[in-house]
Picture 1 (spheres, rainbow, N blue to C red):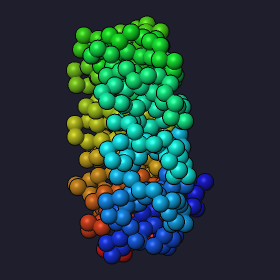
Picture 2 (picture 1 turned 90 degrees about the vertical axis):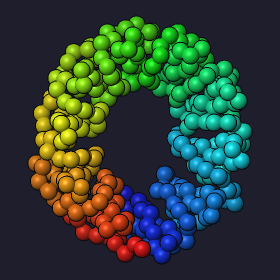
Picture 3 (picture 1 turned 135 degrees about the vertical axis):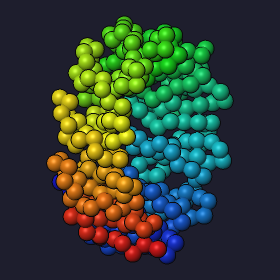
Picture 4 (picture 1 turned 180 degrees about the vertical axis):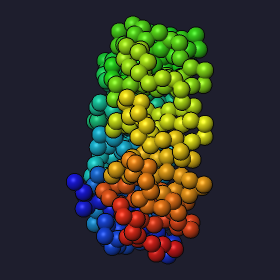
Amino acid sequence: MLNNNTLYPVKLNGKYGFIDRKGEICIEPKFDYVEEFNGKLATVSIGDKIRFIDREGNFKNDDEYDDVYDISEGYTVVELNKKKGFIDSDAKLVINPQYDDAYGFSEGLAAVKLGYKWGYIDTTGKSIIKSQFLDATDFSEGVALVQVGGKLGYIDKNGDTVIEPKYDYANKFSEGLAAVQVSNRYGYIDKKGDTIIAPKYTTGNDFSEGLAVVEINDKYGFIDKEGKNIIPLKYDWADDFYEGYAAIAVGEKYGFIDKEGKELIGPNFDNVDTISKGLISVEVSGKWGYVNAESKFIIAPIFDEALAFVDGIAKVVFENRIRYINTEGDYIWSNET
């Protein structure tokens, strides 16, 4: 279903505002810069300061910030005077800027840095896991990857060690497994720290939709959670599966495959982007357009950039100007300056 409330940033006479899906200006261009809306709010800048507006273009409050970072679970990391804190979904400052660094909330906790050590707080700003780690990451599936004494391991939400820090490189848990490096090779462990897939790969991505990209001898393919080779390691590059499809490369040409390894789009393009609304943005001879699942061009490759469709509208760059098109390739906004 299309979201008729989606707004899109535009630039007119050197100022930024927003249009709706019909291409009509709904927030007058008066800002020096804007970001896309995330939920009810959008960040805008006037001079060197950043503020927040609602979907009517009204400032939520008088608060100003130097920078804005991660937005997750209804909270946004903001920076003021080189310290970071958090605002809620109404742009209300709920945790004062006091941290030297901070990540967004994940599973109810956020990694924050005081001095040279990382710990975790909850959404009220209460310290849940004291600052003690050289580095820390977001919680994923109930555990977080942390660095202790130069090695990586995993903790639970009580701060207790669940997998001893013994790895030089490791990834977060995804679908029950995490890629870890042992003797310069990647394998996969479970949350008990048991090895499930032996470390034999040069590269090991997170599991996504039941499969993970792995690499041996510069060739990429996909394995399942038992380590079975589902799609042969024959590609020169491969990306994670998303909504049933994965981008791959053969030589310097790109395409898409499904989970059975069948080519949805053959590796015939100079580059590809994500699939959206049944259309795929592809690059040919330095220009971008959109093809369907049969590799037939629906929108000719005439753009310098072509992004994914969002509620039936895509941002493109033509003749060094940002424009917006619908799924038929018609401009809904094209008079930017």
